[in-house]
Image (cartoon, rainbow over all chains, first blue to last red; front, side):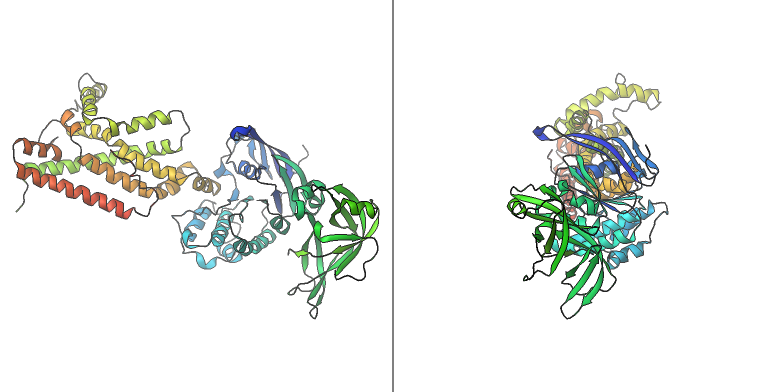
Length: 365
Length: 232
């Protein structure tokens, strides 16, 4: 097969009756990196949760092969029972054991990890900011706190693979903003590979290194986050959330104007942000709808960020009347969503040299 | 002054012994049965559920009648107990235990089963992903989460056994300190027109049953599954 034993190989098929509409089939044959965070993105009903449950061994009808690094979790219909798989699963609802305190919930996981814990409970509690809550019962915690405890609990079982099924979906916006930074720290500081299911692109671009798109039970695109986001399939799936991820470093801070400069290969962007420091590595999300195109450098404009770029691809958007354009500046790529009429009027064809005006960039980390 | 005669006290003591024995037996037998009924997808689930619920609707005399036949020399249970050197169980304390166990079965199985079903799949899935095997999941997740169901089951099993009459009359007869339980003793008092004796025992039963049920409802008010959602 030529497969590396450091990655995660999934070759799965599972079929389910779905109401009167016939059947839903999940058919996956893919390999995921054995390190970093892979986001599985798709609309509701695309099979994201089913995929995670198959990997964890919670779907008894799934057939196929699952290999996590050098360990086979499933071969054909021979499956290792869930409790023998070194898997951590964070469900959509925190699902803490209601009869146990926070400490009891954590001890439940640690006792069954056979001393293999990769991090001390105290470190993880500090990392997720719940060190003071250990004597509480689950019902005394907020939704965000419960979910953070559930994450620590999953980690204390010393998993070789961490599965997260929309852990923020059951939280309101405020709670979500409270948990997201902890998840970010987690993805940076832990060495366990993670599969993160979501239908929220803002979570995906903040957390993932690798992206797998799922549509009606099949993989439609997969690869490095930056590349897949620029794939027209992904862009169409994302609609007006389509965009590019820019990775760079802060090379200038101007306190007077409240600006920071994010430099990347091929240019630099001004960010209206305070609290950034020189040398900081950052990721920014530039939505295609926030990028407009001009043939000459726009001079009299309030738009701060203007970059020369080369057009590399033109493709149709799902919204009628719109085109998706992909541009290069250096090795960095941007995406723009403009009307088809403008594409024709400006004679935008691959190879054209243009100026991009970038109205905003969301800072990710 | 104690209002109870020695025969009354003997009947009370016998009733407590019988109900305690039956309750313990039912908790042991009923828990795995309730677990199976709550978790299985087998086609046998329906018929077994119906079988368990049968004592709720059958007249106690019907159950007593068939047990009388089964426990006797020509019955399967009688043949078994005789082969084991236990003799025949009809008109003995242990015969009452056997029949009462079946008679009170739904009162123990159903609350436990309801409590298990109320847990849902999720806690067991969580426990499995945390490394807990099936026995471990049963002991460390199912049992503690179903605790209110076990309390209901024990109380109802005990109280229902204390209150039985028809089954006892059919297979136990009326042997002092062996099969003459409180309900039979009350019947005897009434037959003998000893209404004072009947009042004392009957009143005690009313107070006992009320206090027990009161405790059950008050302590379980906040729990999700009390299992008391069926009549008799």
